[in-house]
Amino acid sequence: MLLELEGFDASRVHTLNNLLAGKQAVARAYNKRVRNKSFEEGEVVWKAVLPLGTHVASYGKWSPTWDGTFIAKQVLAQGM
Image 1 (cartoon, rainbow, N blue to C red):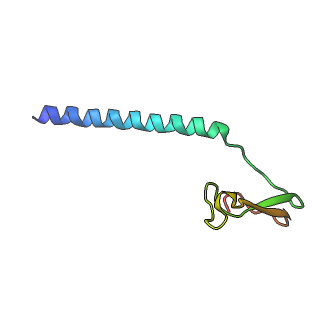
Image 2: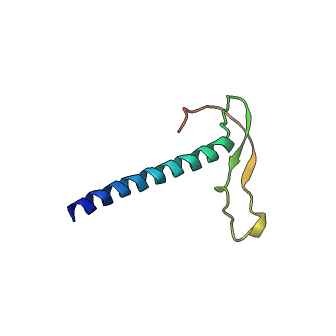
Image 3: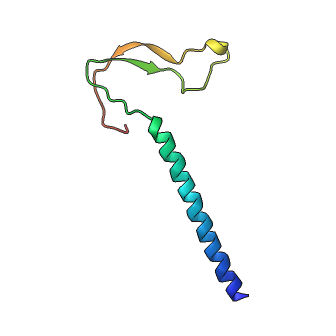
């Protein structure tokens, strides 16, 4: 019985490695299509009104996703 338990743990580790490799493959495929955006001071930019894919019920399918043009006054560090 003890030998069977050791084999069971090895199969779990193997399955976990396969799962992690699959997740990395999906992340690589997704990141191919992602484009970095960088802004500089004085550029004309749009402001997101709602997160993509969400809608306001009162607007129906015509809910706005972006709001007018703005001029960037300050560029913050990445991730802020």
